[in-house]
Image (cartoon, rainbow over all chains, first blue to last red; front, side, top):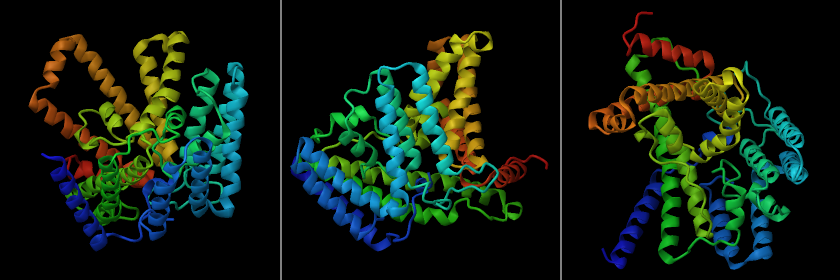
Length: 36
Length: 404
């Protein structure tokens, strides 16, 4: 795989992650380890 | 400053852009300023004096023990440990506190347990002469770094100092991977973990009336929740640190694929496991072997050291008795794994045992058993002791087919 294609794939994947975060992200979440 | 807030996005972006501009002392000062802003948002005026006072005590202890005898070291570690126990407010007869900082108060500030273990590491290594140069600016940033202060990973002081100028490579692709890692962590922690959470074990369930299958799924779901929650956090901070040219230790490596409990602890919260190995297990084991009597018996020394290590691991996680039980069952499992290896090596020899363990069927069975054991052990992480035992009893009489 060429460097350009690899980067393009990574950017597309990041865009998908960001989209999922915006659509489904929960605002209120307390990490369980914060209790420790 | 929640890690999914706009404030944190701006804060972390500014840190990633500004901190790497500087080197040496200037970088340390700028980084400290960022760390101060971050911890202020968590500790506030109530906790800050205690946190700073406790941290400074650790620094003074690390200075004090340099070149001195074992008594000074033991006294210093004891002082820090007693202060930790007092500040955390242990209530071994009380309710479990997992699921949120329910018992948080000014003394038991966020990140106290992690600060405690970091300080013990610095003090012991300072005493043994393996710490290197101890400077207040590196120490302050090491203890307060916004990438590790809340919940680890438990980095070593030497690794922190060695990278204090941001030595890790920062090419375009490395930076892209860093952002990718942050996004992946955010997705795990703020989308997937909250999605799983409603199906996980929690306080107040009608345990005796739930179907066994439902209870088992809730046990699995808690494991998944904990993994997504904590490994998501680790992805976020490891990604941010890499964008500043700093490589943090990894904490997770697909724990679901562990083939025994010993391997599990190297795949889950690995930085804690390595800390426990260096500062609890190894000294205890050495001491037991050299103490004569029963302790000189190799397997007993090993078993006792493993049990103590895991009980410490348990009570480090929480202030109530269920966490001691969590440590106890894991300690017993580790002893069982070592005992099994001991017997199998005696029966088959190392080479044949290795070949046996590499068979696909044996691998799958080992993963299945380990996954179920570690899932079931989490009942003592998610619930208080009484509830945890009731869940196990209910599972034994329903899924397990045992008569009550």
